[in-house]
Amino acid sequence: MLYLIYGLITKCLIVHFRRFANLFYDLRFLRIYVSDFIIQYINKNKEGIVYIAWGNFAINKLKNINEEKNLLLKSGHPSPLSVRFFLGCKHFSKTNDYLKEHGKNEIKWN
Image (cartoon, rainbow, N blue to C red; front, side):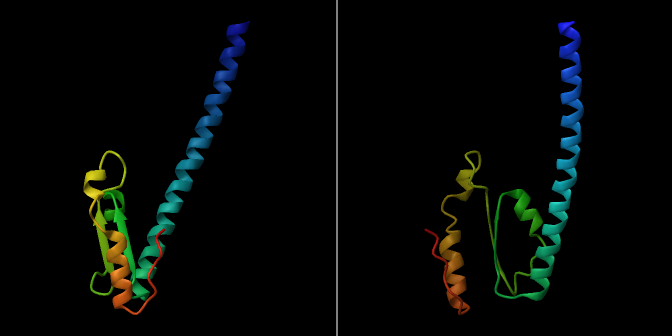
């Protein structure tokens, strides 16, 4: 009897987990498409924007940025596995330098 109850509980959890996983999967792709649309819109309609891409996923997402009108800074992700590609990139100071050159307010990063 105990085994049967355990089996039913496990089955219910698996079914609910799969439903949640599918919902999460759908929401994740919706978020990806919305972010792509926003990036394309900003790239097409705005100038003097600083895009900062940390890691291959972000770099690939921003591959169509017009670098003649905007600044695109790329480096490795600041995670422990790829921090060696991130350290020394000076993205914060480069961002402020670019903003200053284009007559915009600098960002206080602290």
